[in-house]
Length: 296
Length: 296
Image: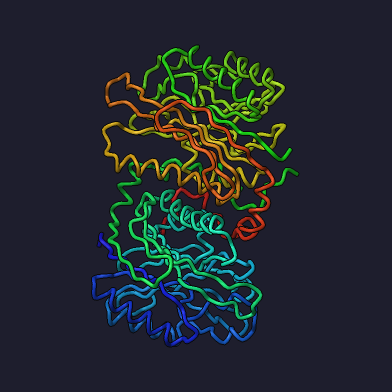
């Protein structure tokens, strides 16, 4: 199968879990009806972004995988005959939680999971409090439409993750995200951040000659602790080709489901024209596994 | 020293070595007179881009390092009291040649050299015929204004090189380049290539929170073998800040020397806001040194 009709669901989250999930499921059905075979949800698409504060109350949101949320999504994958990329606040055991992508194949089975490897921690994004770093490495998830290099949000800033996914055979890079602006920042600063976020992901497509899908949530979410002015999630979810060109992009302020055709044979053509994999200096990259190359 | 006045010389090359060198030296003097302390020349700035064909005649262009070319540049560095980043077709011994960046400190001494690690080979860019891959690794060159992460052209497509330079303490990423369009390509294809080239380099600035300088030659150069329509070197040399934003850019069709102030303290501020170095999963990056992660 060489053509993939990819859709992404850029979603505005609400306080009510059921409302969020129902919206996701409706959009999945609509996208499937218009021919999508791969549908990517935002990061942690069932909840407001609770990582704006550190509070034990939110651990009650976590679910096992498989669990109630994955069952609903599995049923949607099966009934709509689509691949779904979701993320779940995973409860692995009592006191051990991950930010986990779960991929469902068209038959409703779980094709694989990926546990977010790079965990951020910044004012407003207190993820290290909630999520233990993933321990499954950068392994593409094999599905009936191809190998998906699924990572999650903060991973998108690290070229190493994208490269490892590509080396392991990923055919599409996929980043469900939750990123936004501090409303108090200047519009110059906001543009700087948005530009950096797009650019770094486009670069993974370029460096690895792979198409890329990035979903983001949209809309303002208040900080329940009132420490900050909340987050304006900037939407602008996008899909690129194998040269990092954005072929489809959602709006900055509205929920939107967008679609693009991805030709999986394009990567090989691009790699023949831009043969980076041929020329990597693997004899000289060993120090990438160092924290810092200190002189002493 | 926290402020660096960086200049880059975007140059149109001619058949005559002396003409090219004289232009470089004049522009170095002019830039130094307007306050530059770091001046970056294009890749192989003394010659037409001879790699458009494979012919033994061009090996006569190669020089030892130190040698006649580096002596001229060393004198320019000293008399103008500037750092110069140059590249030389290096003859290391009979039959062994490199594409080598040579950095001169303000006193005219050679601060260090870097031998291009990734060597391209594509129609019109037959570099593997001329240059052996570098064997010095990705080591920043220490100068009186800071540590320079100097790489060369094709290196710019590989995130690993930029990362290794950053981990070894580079404070500025620098890529002398020679890249252009096949005049027969459509303007859409040309834009795609230019966009990818800018984006991948901006991404190295972003991923490593470092400023970046990229010089390119400009103008049409004929293919002496008449196999192709030659190359339209696209100029558009640029300087970015530590978030990958282009702060200064040269034209697409004219020689031009541009300048920008770089504040070396900005990297630390950016790293505190975007702490990628804190979160790299060095325990999980080992496979970066593999050619491909085969399943068997």
